[in-house]
Image (cartoon, rainbow, N blue to C red; front, top):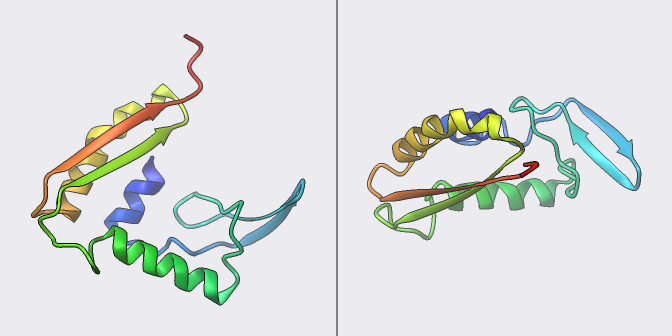
Length: 114
């Protein structure tokens, strides 16, 4: 979740960064991003893919097409319950990003034994 928080805090400036490409099974994976993420299903080395993600990020940040006051619903899947502690920080960052809109966050926690 820290990577998502970082992306929102810097308006996704570091989102399309990577320092390494790996071949994992049938995937060419772009890894070691500045925000600790990876890209398994998109070739972010291609200009058209980078442009598409730039448009998506602008739309996500409300820079196009959406009124600033439009209610935001954010769904985030956690890898474990350990990430729950960062949820309030994420909510605060989302509220700062969408200052004029109500914000709702739904967390889905994976990898639970029970």
